[in-house]
Length: 190
Image 1 (spheres, one colour):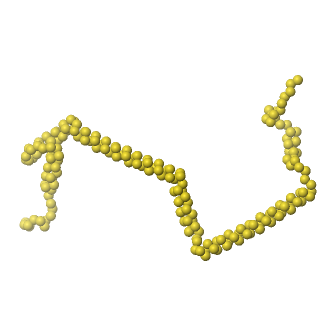
Image 2 (cartoon, one colour):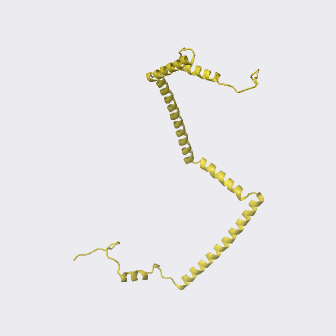
Image 3 (cartoon, one colour):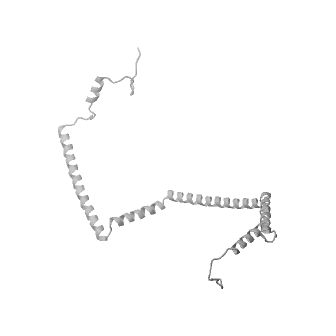
């Protein structure tokens, strides 16, 4: 014969009879007498009375507390400000805040250094580009074009560096700007 052990998780489904048995089970294993039941009921009534008394005492103490605060001029808004300040101070003194602050500070310093290095690299690259043969060739072409335009317009054909040509062109254009100020002219032909 085969013996089968039934475990906690039985694979057979429950039947109607099993459900009825389960509903009739009394989870209270001790059998209580009527006297014990009455004692417990009286204890419950006593506890409820004590709870109500404590609630009344607490309410009275809360009123007294509010009156004393009012006499001192402590308003709910002042308390809120004080609590907020205390909370802010506590947060700033927490290790999580300090670690986060240090991390952000370090990240800011590293970002600043990286941007500084990037700016230096760009400046260096522009300097290298300006000294490159391509830029020199472009510079010569501009100088030649400016010299050609100056000779055709009537200026002298002196050639100079790119900077000299640019500054002389800027000076010439600022001197050639007409003014419309009638007060400066001593003779006014009318």
